[in-house]
Amino acid sequence: MARNKWKAKGMVWLRRSVQTLCMLLFLYLFLQTAYHPIDRPGGPVTLFFQLDCLVLLATWFAGVAIPAGLLVSLVTLGFSVLLGRWFCGWVCPFGTLHQVFSWFRRGSLELRLKRAVYSPRQKWKYVILIGLLIGVLGGVNLVGWLDPFSLFYRSLATAVFPALNSSLHALFAWLYESDPGIGSAKVTTVSEPIYEVLRTHLLVEAQPRYYMGILIGVLFIVIVALNLWRARFWCRYICPLGALLGLVGKNPLLRLRKNDEACNGCRLCVAVCPGGANPDAPSNASEGWKPAECFFCWNCQSVCPKQAISFGIEVPSKEQK
Image 1 (cartoon, rainbow, N blue to C red):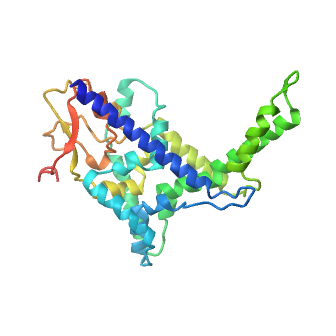
Image 2 (cartoon, helix red, strand yellow):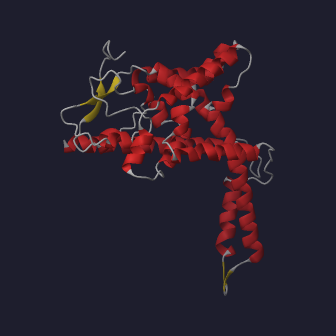
Image 3 (cartoon, rainbow, N blue to C red):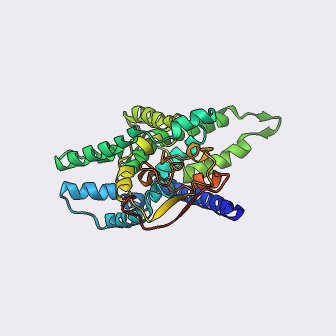
């Protein structure tokens, strides 16, 4: 039993490590789009968009030629058929951001359980997905407004990065002009070399301004803040890419197994489930575990005091389909 628990915790830390690496890669590629003082353009910023099978589907529905790079998203689609919504829990940088802010939720166990259980409103994302695809067929392509990579990238480019860029420039300008310090020891002795590094690798000299940046920034803050109410609110209720991956991964080979006899009904697994996937449901229940809502984060198995939950490869039965 102890071995299984450590194995589950190992999977949790492996998932966190993969999430961190994907987030850092996304931010690195984003920063490569900025025009630095030497006017060096960015690198392969389309990498994550090429993994986005929602963009592939929308392009196909629009009846236009599909770029060869988008065919990479078939890998995402194929693995989702076999492993469920693993992409949402392990790769998606926007999902990782929501996961991080979900950790800051506070409240009693009872309150967290109330907000963590599956809600029928989680079907909203499927309605949003269908609506977006119908719009594409009708010649109105609004997928870019709610696609997680597009939304995250646009929020960073028009609101978050400009605000960070302006704030840091203003801070270091104030330090240079006021030159604070104690006696002969001046802050600028340290701050100026740091500023030079930031100007070379992060900050831009002439940051473009976008009139919609404030509105996008406010919406971005609201979307992220909703995680303090319900874990991964965006992923549960809105994300059309998550809805698509949930549909294709509704009956994955990687499945949650529950030992009903070992379970003591503590429901800690529900409290830490970011997707509202009902990991505590009895194995023989008609409304049991919901793989279309599961991010395969291994949180439930890692916190189970009785090790009544595990994951394994299993061919879905007719009742599970």
